[in-house]
Amino acid sequence: MANTVGVVVTTKIVAGLIEGTQLAGGLREFPESIDDTNGLIEVPAESLCDIICDAVVALAPKDARLEAVGVAMPGYIHQGITLDSPNLPQLKGVPVCANIGAGLQRRGIDTRLSVFNDADAVAAGIAAIRGQMDRQVRVWTIGNGIGFGRFPWTEGPWEGGHMVVTLDPKENYCGCGGRGHLEGIMGHRAMRLRFLDMEPDEVFSAAKKGDRRCADFVELWHRALAAATASQIHLEGAGRFYYTGRDIQRLELPRLKEHLWEMIKMSPLQNYTVEILPEDPSLAVIGAGIAARIENKC
Ligand SMILES: [Zn+2]
Image (cartoon, rainbow, N blue to C red; front, side, top):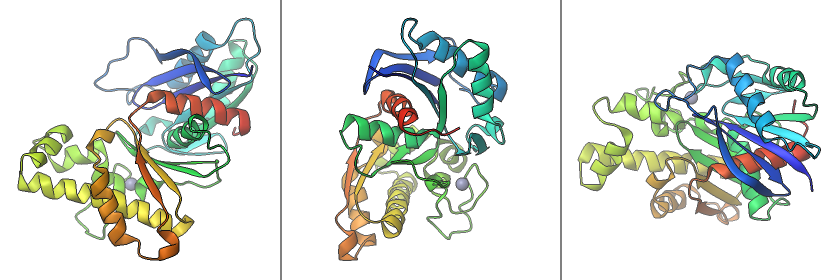
C-alpha cells in the first residue's frame, strides 16, 4: 500500500502517515512543546522548514518506501515558493520546496515533495474521504485566516479570503492591507482589531444575547461569506461547497442559505449545495498526503 506523509502548517504543525486514504497511527503535533499563545508566528522560516523535515522523519515508515510528502501551508504558493502569506509573514518569498527538499535529503529521505495551500489540502481531504475525487470540491476554511480551497488543484492564486465583499472604505482590517476583504471581516485578527475590547468568541455570544453592535456584526459576517460564495458561483458555476475550520461553530447555515438565495438569482446557478463539516485537522493532513501522490508541485 502506498505510503505518504502529510504535514499541515497553520497555527501549529500537524502531521500524519497516510496509507491508502487512511491515517495510519493518528495525528501528531510538532514540535511537541510549542507556546500556544503565539503559535508559529515568531518561528523563523528556516526553523519552520526544519520542524517540517523532523516531522517527516518521525513519521516515515522504517521498513517501507515513502512514495511522497505533501506539505500544506497558508498563503499563495507558486512553483514551490511562498509568494505571500499574510498570516505567517516570515514565509513571504521563501523557496519552501527547495528548503524542505534539501532538509529531507540531509536527513536521508529521498522522495517526491509537493507544497500546497492549506485550504486546497482540506479540499483534497474532503474529496478523498467522501469518495469525490472525480468531482470538483470547493471549501471555505474559517479560522485564524479565511481560506478558500479547491480540488482538483488548479493553477492560480485562488486567494478567496481576500475577495472584496464590501465597498465601505472603513473596512480595512485585513492583514494583507487590502480594503473591503472577506478576511478583514471574518478573520480572527481582523475581529480583534474591530472589537478592541472583546474577543471574537465574546462578540458571537453577546450577539446571541441581543447586543446590537455584535448582532449587526454577526449579520455582516454571514453576509460577507455568502457574498464570497456567490461571487465564486457566478465565476465558476454552482456545485458543492463545504465550510469547515477551527471557528466553524460560528456559522449558522440557515442564515448563509438565506443570503445566498438573495444573491444568486440566475436559475442555472442555483443548483449549489452548502454543507458544514466539523473541524477535523486530519482532513488537511490526509489531503496533503493524497494530493502529493497525484500532483507534483515543487
Ligand atoms: Zn486581504
